[in-house]
Length: 384
Image 1 (cartoon, helix red, strand yellow):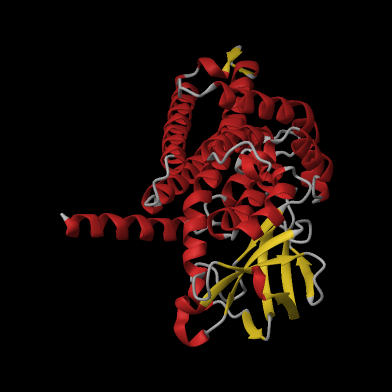
Image 2: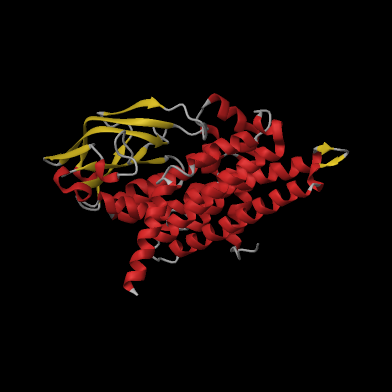
């Protein structure tokens, strides 16, 4: 389909595709096997200015565009969802500063993030607080002109490799979700260390680590927005970032579909290619239709965000929900089309299937997305 992309967006697509084909695809299996952060590829992305496409020009970027971020993430994910999420997760950690940072905070952090000199991460999830963000136990106590952080975050993408972290901590536990606040914490701050690196099923090229805060002292100037706004910072950040997760899912699905189509033309059974069998054709038709429908929804929601629409919670959740479910279905069907070969690591589709699964889980499970969507729809009906 023609999505009426601008010349700049087409350039971003073509550049991302070139990096994916030349730099990522040849190394995807190796990074997956070694469970290693792709520092050399992150440098390539930085050289190509792709970290600047979601940062305004006045802070060294190319102009805020969630659609451009989605286009780049999709292309990178066609080659490797794990490497792509290292890039996209930096955007997740950057969005809170873009949305809620003071001018001083933006000038301090955004230029290096826009140039890829530093990457970012977002610290919300804890051992006892996943879908229930109000249950976080990490605390931030104000002492004089500093805050002192104590607690542990886990499952943090880019943990240990990022230099800038947006961290959600409780400044007043008695207020529940309204007692959470958001802070910028820099790697190397005394009292801020890293714990276990997770051994994951998929997206193994990305680092997923614990963040450990032990009497970690940060200046009061590192508070984002105001005390008690941590939950709002989180929700508004997810409204902006969920289309990026959805784009990752679309890229993974498209990558798996491309491999399945190629294989179906080459594989022969009963003296003809399996692509001539109606059963295979119908699977490919369904897979292609689902991917295109997911892409259309993702791009549409990204355009809503870029238009300045601040009420996109329902649509962002829809994009993430639909695209990630599509990714799981399409990658599973791709494995089926390859048959026994699809189950082997000699072929890449089993990796696409493993990588797809996480898109149904992080940044809010798909069950939580359904809750969000239903709440919005029911409220809209009451309003009418």
